[in-house]
Length: 302
Image (cartoon, rainbow, N blue to C red; front, side, top):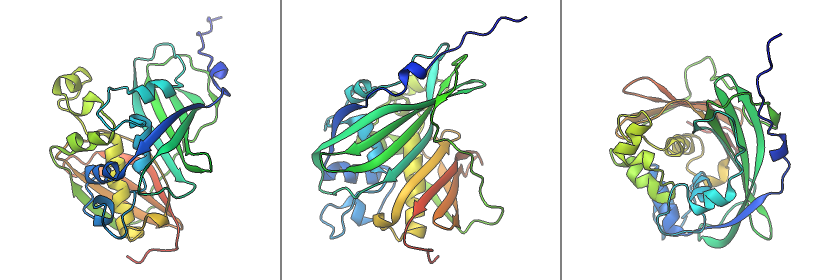
């Protein structure tokens, strides 16, 4: 009888108390983020616009920057403090695999330093070539909860992982018909250099030597920047750029993007869900899939 392979037990790391830390943002942060995802709409990039608003996917960056207003290390102090990653045997590196964000209550666009994020391990799913580790974040203050986020990190090389806890991961196919809308956006060669100023200072996105260490010929675009560009396409075509109509977003990262490449986002309306995917026009590679934005306010007029 073959000996059983050693298992990595993650159960002891589940059900632990939430980790909490302070986070904050100001109007400059909101403008910088919107510019980083290519927005030209004044309501997202000009603080004196009468309808100045937070772009709905901005809260993703708060888990990176925390309360800081200067550049920070990577991982940042906030990331280190909030880490709930269990030790996994054989894990070599972590890849940003899946993201989910849901609005529970509206946030002010004027900014505040009295918000907190609480973090816990949601679940770990063993896979053939590694493990998917899912972490849940709640953005809140003393009065209410505002945002719920789930991030899925694929730990390459993790071995013998016993799946445990909950999963937010799901497979989602695009409808078998022509898309209801298509948007193209040509990223600039300094897109990642601008986006990083929102709070994600991973050198993979700016330092050529660091990028080559990880097998890339040049620094790549942040996955969350690609997410923002796709969300912007959905907001434009199905929400009339009204943040109040944006309820949630979910997606899986499929392949990297090089700054300067063109992202093509195809969208299908399925009730209150806008199912979408994004591809690199120059190569045809899928960048984002298993993706949707949940909207409110009925069917869009395209």
